[in-house]
Structures are given as structure tokens and as C-alpha cells.
Length: 77
Image (cartoon, rainbow, N blue to C red; front, side):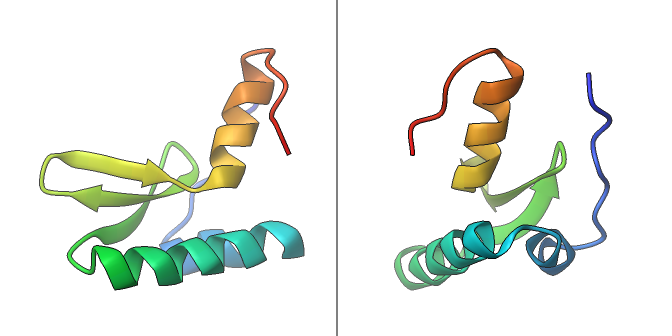
């Protein structure tokens, strides 16, 4: 299994993504801030995510695609 990359911040994680993924993550970030401004951004298991009082609420879409690939699945574009 590939070793997880460590990031000091969500912004560092974002900047390390490809341009298409950055576009998706920025749009999702804007949406989350608008509809659920109390969530905090962090990086868990090498993937960007939003955390609420009870734990992770959402992982960014590129993270889901990577997890599916690692599990042998085929992510839907």
C-alpha cells in the first residue's frame, strides 16, 4: 500500500492537488462554508475533509476516488 502523504494544513493539501482536483475542492470548500460555516477543515488519512462536533462530515471528491481505486473499484467521473 502507498504511504500517506502528511500535510500541515488543508491549504497545503489543496495546493498539492492537480488543477482539476483543486477546482473541485475550491468549489466544495465554498459550498461548505456557505451551508455549514461551523465545520472545520483538516486533513485525515492524507485526504482533505470537513469536521463537525461528532467527527468527519465529508471528504473531498478526489479522496473518494483514490479510496475506491485503492480498494479495486472504479470511480465514476
